[in-house]
Image (cartoon, rainbow, N blue to C red):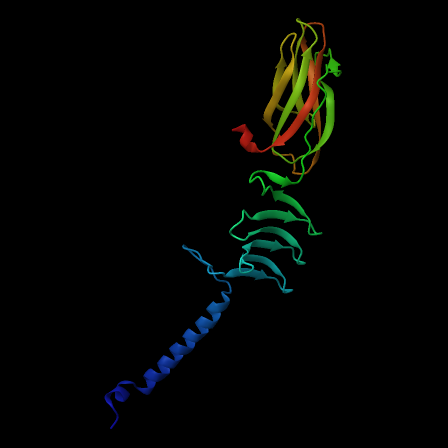
Length: 247
């Protein structure tokens, strides 16, 4: 006669438990690969020197987040061929470093780690001009170009800094910027007899039809609105700015 425990567990119970065990093992095996898995509220935490890698079909680690060594950690993003594209890393005791790289491995965009603010690369030129009396002048009653150039659309806002002159106390006028024939921002009034620096904008581009990177003609125009003298403009600086400057 068997013990009470043997009698309580029938052959049917044993088979049911085996099936449940097999199912649990399959679920555990699938969960280790996290195929087509999702993570909800609370997310996932990787700590104590752990890291997360994304490896493509060619075996290249195109993304690596977490610890790279005993004392260095951060985030690295590589191109499909393995070339470094973007990196943010440091030791935890320094300020760290963030950079975007070209195909040759040279950094083309970086923050200025030494000062703790602004850019280190790229080097952005500062446009300046002579402050002598403007030589580009007009007596036209309608807007005409006094300065013109070509720009690549990079920012949603433009800002200009001009030296303007109305040749005498009875002559007044107006100045504006035009992008491919479309006025940018509000017209700048030049008072009679004025000879001064004036800021234009910040002014939003006319509409959203200007595709990023597109080449567009930019003109600074002027006209005379009163008197018989001339209106002159010397363009000292034109900058592209972010939309926050419109606030």
